Image (tube, rainbow, N blue to C red; front, top):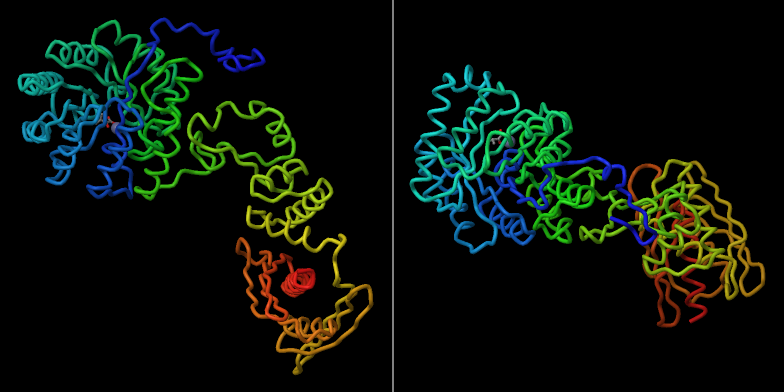
Amino acid sequence: MMDNDGVDQFWYDSQVKFERKPKRVKVFDTTLRDGEQTPGVALTLDEKFSIAEALNELGVDIIEGGFPVSSDGEREVIMRMAGAGFSAKVCGLARCVEKDLDAALAADVDLVHIFIGTSPIHRKYKLKMSEDDVLANAVRSIRYVKERGVSVHFSPEDACRTELPFLKKVVKAAEEAGADHINIPDTVGVMTPQAMYWLISELKKEVKIPLAVHCHNDFGMAVANTISGVMAGAEIPHVTVNGLGERAGNADLEQVVLGLKLIHKVESNVNTKRIFEVSQIVQRLTGIRVMPNFPVVGSNAFAHESGVHVHGVLAKASTYEAIDPEMVGAKRRILVGKLVGAAGVAAKLKELGVAVSDEQAHAITRKVKDLGDKGKKVTEEDLIAIAEDLVGSGSGEGRLVELRDLSLSARLGKAPLSSVVLMVHGQEKKATEDGVGPVDATLKAIRKALGDPDIQLDEYHLDAISGGSNALADVTIRVSKNGRSTMARAVHEDIVMASVLAFINGVNRILRK
Ligand code: KIV
Ligand code: ZN
């Protein structure tokens, strides 16, 4: 894809020739089957149905709704999906045993996903079957379903640890028995992109029906292996939303769809603009949150913090983004941290609805960096508070009251004492007061120095922003005078200073009103 400066960011990939790459794939989503096998995930039937609706809206071609024989509820919800008028086909999983096949057929699915272990490990330890038994069971089951007028998606389970001659024999027999597609599962994720490319190329020589690939992520290669399988000619990638699935999960839908589309120009029916939303639905319903740095849908996938990157992205987003966030329904985020620059701070505040001058942006940036050096992470709330604090308490014109000095003494066995020096309407005023604590003593001293008994402190609220012992103190107060009142807020590392600045901000506001 060329951008408007004529740059093809995938130029190197375009130098590799793929002879059997399909133009389009059919996306087989197994979030509700393999994804539900994720440790800790248990969806209610209604939640399963909501996810199926979201997947259908997303545009996947096949929804594997579950394992119908596993419970009555599972069979019923799959039947509900099958009868919902989805444009996606609904599929149910079945072993090569009659009760599984019957349960899938009873759920009225569009296709039955029949599987049987073919690798020596599965034959010997799990099934206790010879090669011939495995073959015969597969053929009999495929015929059983086909004779009942339903399509078959067949998987030689653990295909990627199965001897190639036997695997070839199985896939040929499955095609002859009437299977509509054959899936090649990398059940324990042992493949590499090169190995998957080679294996699919070999199997394409044996059968004419479409091949699928189902990759697990044990070595973190599920997405790459799936994409390689497609580039070798497999037309049906198996995926799950957020990469959910047994153990380390399955190939992630978002990454596979986008990688195929953007890097390899292989289309699918997925409406990419809904990707972020569907990922959020699945995160909420399964309770499994993706890591912030998860590609495409992680909260940092389109976040920029360092001054260099923010500057680049503000000039042209593609300097540091290979994917346009809008394409997946996500939003770019400019974050502030110790590496931020004033342009990033101003852009972020603008996004948050706070306008600042260049000078103010630089002052806020200094404060953010200062906090960063102290190990403090600055959140959006922190930034707004810092901006309000600096903008509201700067020595700009119109400040009627300013703090010139403050000294506090804690006294053993006695109330703390606070002395303040204020400039009030250009005149220096001093006062000293004690109180139940340092904040109380200081606010009392300020009121005394103001010399205006009508100014009242009506409310005082203290929050620690972002938690932790090095949190910022965020003080919000309400000040009133003669029936008029105003809110004011300030943020500081020190509670007393946050309280004083908030109070003085409020006093300035009420006096100006
Ligand atoms: O990983 C696997 O082999 C499976 C099969 C049921 C296809 O999920
Ligand atoms: Zn699997």
